[in-house]
Length: 466
Image (tube, rainbow, N blue to C red):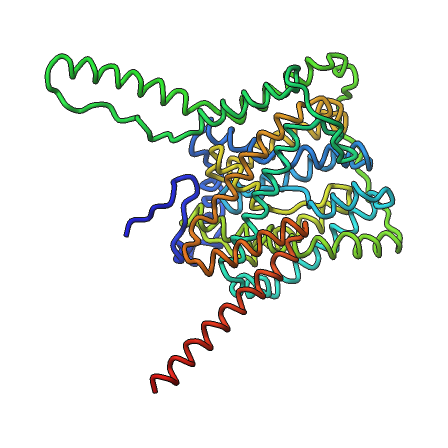
């Protein structure tokens, strides 16, 4: 039977292409691999894809900068370096996102400051590095059933979409993570603007293959005229579909940010922020571990490693990914940058889906984003927060909406009723309990119960037949 899955996120076969071990570790082979990984498949599409992850990155980083004095300049520099390195290593638009559970704790608890945030990031990174080096993460990845992974991805995608709708409908106080009331229809951050941006992205990123074939029949002048019209329409469609929709929307947001408050240009200070080693107390390590690391670990293991590994193989079956590599990658990022005050980061299935949705296909996509972060961090430093504070939140909601929807569509390869039931149980409990760990636990229990039922039924049928 032909595969009926839509073309937005392909579902991979179990086999993946393996790298030739004789050339993988030679100096020439490494340089060639890096060059190949950073080659842009399409300049505009890759640039567009780089914007796809900002719907989650900007709100979290900006909120912590304004409310907890997070060093935005240092965070931009380190996350920019992470983006460039992951793009060169993996050759796909591997995202770098703030750790959401740690960020949520910092925004809800005034006593959870920068030392506690960084301590939580270092400890989380240490655990993930150990799990990766000992290959325990690969064992976990092998044992977790696909239906549970899909449930986690569906829950994360829907969570992004719900948050996006909230950003669009309500005026947001990002530092306090509170809604202040209904958003006005008109204005530089109104509902009409968000709706227009949604419609624009839907039109531009629609079915790009639809209607692009011109008539090949030569049955007289009328047919030739119709063929000419079809070709002209096809050219128009190709131009429209090639527009970098997310990039255009983001640039519009930047322009509107200056239009909302022109005096913001006087608050910009050139030069990087001062970078210092964070000073930790025993209390910071303890609080960071209890309130930051423990809640973050399940989310990092499930969504930043397991789900990303599976989604990466779905989107790029020709690439070779391992849970071990991703776990070590996340661990090392935080064991380095967090000492200097950079926001703890991880990979994320939602960010990968968002960048893929808008055209990201290579490591060059995130390398472009990393280079932009690096330049902004070195040139503007933390003063960039004054500009981002004026950025229309409704536009961030639009970008986040499409990232969430794209991630949620990955569950379409769940075909059986039993697997669908497990997936939905995992999704429901993840959303209701606001915990990926709770959803994972409930999903695994239901999965094991169904397998036990099938095993006892088969054994009973065999005994009766005997």
